[in-house]
Amino acid sequence: MGTTNADIHIDEISEDLSFVAASAVMRKIRAQAELLAKVDGPILILGESGSGKEVAARLIHKISARSGYRFLKVNCAELASDLPENELFGCEGGASIGGTEMNTGRFGLCDKGTVLLDEVTEMPARHQAKLLYLLQDKQFRGENRVDVDVRILAATSVNIEKALAEKRLREDLYYHLSTFTVRLPPLRERRDELQVLLGYFMNRTAERYGLAPRSFSDALLAACQHYSWPGNLRELENFVKRYLVMGDEPVALSELRPQVGFRLAEEVRQGRPLEPASRKDRDNSEDANGLKSLVRSIKGEAEKNAISNTLAKTGWNRKEAARLLSISYRGLLYKIEQYQLTPPSSYFSPLTKNRAWRNGQGH
Image (cartoon, rainbow, N blue to C red):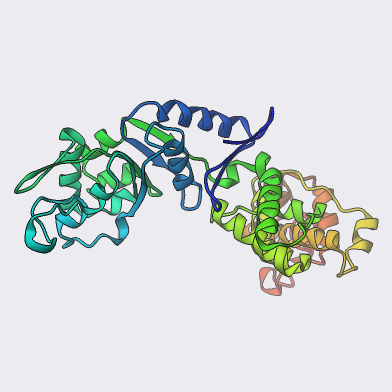
């Protein structure tokens, strides 16, 4: 079914989809999926957009007793509120020629298989009511009762508690769907797997495109580790595709640079000690073409912004700024000189400038 060793388990679900478990958390989710595949009931899959909810759903289907039948994904966000019920659930004597055959609807097309209701909180209210009947009775209630044998999996990327409070999802339907719940972590919480995922996507994409895989330098790996990946696995895979095809590492670094700088600045503001750069580092940073210098410049820029913002916040009270930044007063003076920071002239009047300097304020 997949590639596995003591630390990594990869399930090849299709040509385009794989479930990669390279951490204790993801291996636990993989084991959970294997258990739930044996229990023929609804499952609610929660996770941010791009975190792999459809992949998890397809994995459960693939290792279940229904694997020999169809897997159908229904995008609930695309269901119009006026969509005829028989289009989704089916009915007898419906729209087929002569009215003598059964219009099976989307669920009927997946008989004995698995249906994934993607973004279930976007399903129109009237269809939620019919879905509830289906879950309770295994039948669709219309003018005629139609037996429906499918397993229902539901997924959403929204805060489920908020969706319930806003009446976007019926509570009774939620309780049926959430008999079992799988929560997928965002990629920013899977940093210990990032190098494995980068290598996996690189090798798979290179094979598909008929190209030689590219390696990731230490500088690029460091930038990837500091990036927050708001698009999760989908964004990571697309990033790898671009890097493989274009082969321009400085461009790849520049894609990550804005958020990398923001994250480093946040780390500084949250009180992580700042280490003064060595003279060798400062000299090397002048080499604009060096990949390592690009990463150093990202950190330097974030550090400079954090210090400048803190000084502005404290009215250039350097002792207070040093306290907020969790560095020594002398270390802050070093950084002010290193980044050539000066206060706006409006901060101090000519009469108070010298006094402020003596009290740890001013420049």
